[in-house]
Image (cartoon, rainbow, N blue to C red):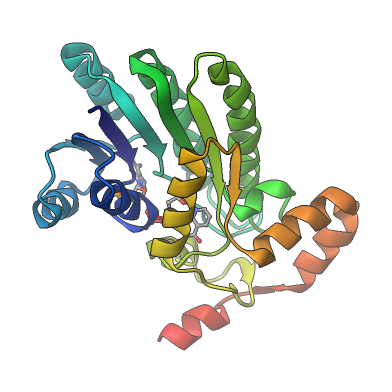
Length: 265
Ligand SMILES: NC(=O)c1ccc[n+]([C@@H]2O[C@H](COP(=O)([O-])OP(=O)(O)OC[C@H]3O[C@@H](n4cnc5c(N)ncnc54)[C@H](OP(=O)(O)O)[C@@H]3O)[C@@H](O)[C@H]2O)c1
């Protein structure tokens, strides 16, 4: 059996993919990639899986080199690549520091493309790539501009790869969840005085959406949109001019703390 490479495996969606693939016995070995090694070690121990822990900051050249070196030295057969490492910070162009915007592009876009390029040569017919897009990838978003644009990139890139790699029998699925209950939201809201949504609703179960995505990937689907609300958004963004929907989204924003945050505290 082949190996699974999962970035962002230390929490949330990436961690849940490890659990799901392990439960379904879809890989004989797991390469877990993120910065927090101790979290990945604990996960591997809990699940009793054969794991290689790769502690790496994927916004850095050294982080990416670790994956390149491991692939070149071990030359494994890769059955799954799941690019789940990613983050988003709310805030308009004049509220977020440039460094935050650059890191979003470095991780959500550059690292995802580079890791895909490094890994595909080790894939064979029937292998799967899952790329983390988002429900935010369908339209430009006020106050979430770089993040939404980075995920729009992932969607277009993944759809093109679906056809390119399809010629080799490799399936690519772009995973587009709505808001999921992970550490993502707390981190996205970590800057107090920026424009942000009044409410992030509905909040989806990580286990449920990941399970759905694995099913979609095994069926060879190009895209997996998690729930009715996000599917409706997707449809409306296709049918209506983005000016109308952007105005609706702007009305749902406010400056400062969100209700989600208040309800947690
Ligand atoms: N939760 C949502 O509502 C939602 C909705 C749509 C799409 N998504 C997407 O889903 C993906 C996973 O997010 P999540 O919800 O699971 O959030 P999460 O719990 O915060 O997980 C993010 C993962 O990315 C890793 N990561 C962050 N920065 C990194 C870096 N510089 N280098 C290497 N790894 C890094 C984190 O590990 P370390 O901190 O240990 O490095 C963590 O494992 C992201 O691409 C996100 O954009 C999430």
